[in-house]
Image (cartoon, rainbow, N blue to C red; front, side, top):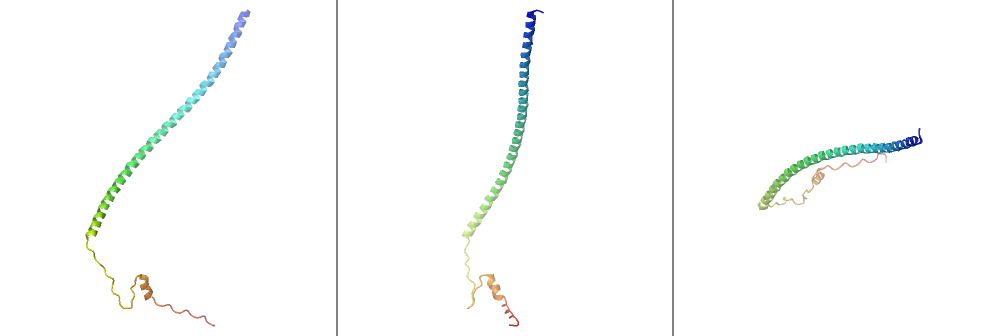
Length: 136
């Protein structure tokens, strides 16, 4: 073999080694890209699940709002009706004739019972005197 053939063989070997190094670096970058793509796909799937949960939550919230709105509308209508009844009764009570009340007649020397306990206390028998200690 001639010197030119050996030099070309060595040059080809060096180029092959450089190609292997570039291939190895490219393979590492592609693997990192695939891992990032898998992570991105997982993040997109998580985002999709979160969006579905948010949509369901909004639907539940909308249903609860509608229910509360109906309930409050019903309560407001009842309150308006009761307010109208109360206003009507107040108007009738204001226009009704006044009835004056008199104090009951008292007998001389008798105090009126103002508290039911006063009546009960006046009807209760007096307690018996405590027995004296024996042998004293």
